Amino acid sequence: MVYIQDSLSWSIQDSLSWSLGFAISTTLVLLPLLFFLGTPLYVHVAPKGSIFSGILQVFVAAFRNHRLPPPPPPPPAAFHNPISHNHHAITPVPPTPSFLFLSKAAIPPPSGAYPPSPWRLCTLQQVEEVKCLIRIIPIWTSGIICFVALGQQWTFSVLQSMKMNRHLGPQFMIPPGSVGTIAMLGLALFIPVYDMVVVPVTQRITKLDGGITLLQRQGVGLLISIFSMVVAAAVEKKRRDESSEGVAISVMWLAPQLLVMGVAEAFNAVGQIEFYNRQFPEHMQTLAGALFFCSLAGSSYLSSLLMAVVKKMTGGEGRRNWLEDDIDEGRVDYFYYFIAIIGVVNFIYFLICASFYRYKRMGEVREERGEGDFEVCKVES
Image 1 (cartoon, rainbow, N blue to C red):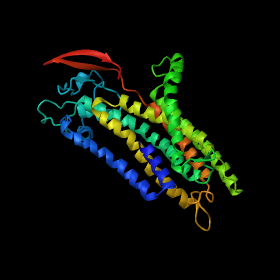
Image 2 (cartoon, rainbow, N blue to C red):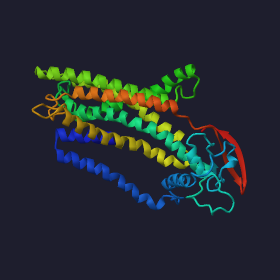
Image 3 (cartoon, rainbow, N blue to C red):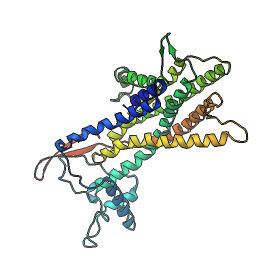
Image 4 (cartoon, helix red, strand yellow):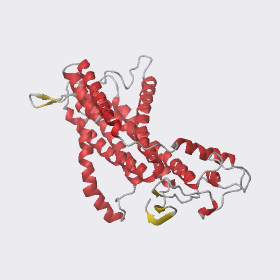
């Protein structure tokens, strides 16, 4: 929806008026506020504490218990792990041997040593949830670089198209802000192809439910994003060379890199969302949804930082920087190659993080059948 709004705004700004374009964008942003009229009909569920306070409690309790002897190995009975009756279905996370210093937060103190408090004694479930978060954070950071690559093409494709021949036939001209919809088209077309063709083929080879693992899907997306930057750099060099001779090449030269970018997003972005939803415990599902959008926000800030650094390092002393306002005077292709090199380093970092990552293990679901009665069954976490 945001991409469509931006494209519409750019089209109107380019063809009619900048003021009208911004006014339409503002109106579209305000329209969702009408949904607040249904607030009285919404069923509100009272919050039961804060996720972040629970995370902080684990670190505080682990620090306060750091003098306790090392935690014993499973069974979990050695830890403080009461069953909550606040949920109809609870999926316990089994104890893991990683980050043992955090496990000290769930070691019950000697009887009568001090009154237990959530800042002194946490449940095993709390500790394992924090461990899941710690294991996911390195994978999450690698996704930020991928969105940096995708975001740069979305930004500069608009500037490139303004220097290119945007005519499709004698009457129709593509608005600069609408060029990015090619990437959206690539994303929309490839997702059903992935589900109906790629997954069945890879399933027969790997014998996995999804064909490839969630981390492998993200890794493929990172590789494709690097390839898209290389293609974008080659296209920009051709555009700049032709423009220096007074020739404006067709805007459709941008289509290959944008289509590849859409495929990269189908692998990495969709893979990230599925990875967070499956790997985060139930109590942290809201955080799982927010983490993806934090990646998008982080990539925007990092993009601004990279652009500022590149402008400063490549310009000055009479030299033109790579990112001049007039892209014919700059070297956007060099900047694309620079992002591709960062992508290669990020991909190596991702491989290292993925090699150490361990997926959430099989757990038990305790379904409440009555007061104090539970039925235990196995589910795949």
